[in-house]
Image (cartoon, rainbow, N blue to C red; front, side):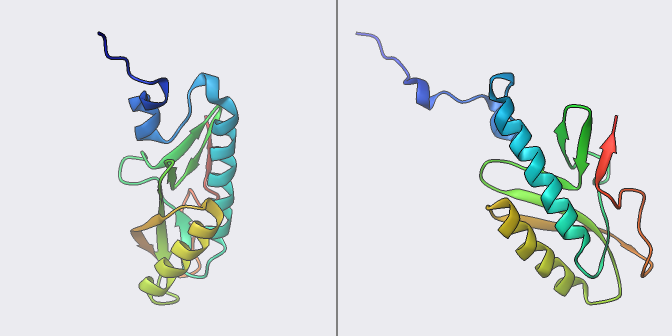
Length: 133
């Protein structure tokens, strides 16, 4: 008697870790990119957010064909938003508002990481959150 693993129990490690789909799954890739873009745009509209941040090594992004959405990293279960803040309001208030906005748009729990503090009313180079390759 042989034991078989049902197809539904087999997952791709790369897909599970990155939150990105496979080539057979291009529709969900596009959806993840749309969600990440919407999250980025909404987060940038929050008072106190100076810019989206790619993290220390630029690794925090949702990768799409031809571009990436900087500062937003999504998986099926949760997500992360990395931001630079200014001191125009308390950092915790800014982070809490960002979390709330991001969770509503992404439809999943979102962690917020404050990467840096900028001068008030100045934006970093990734303020728009989209980088073209």
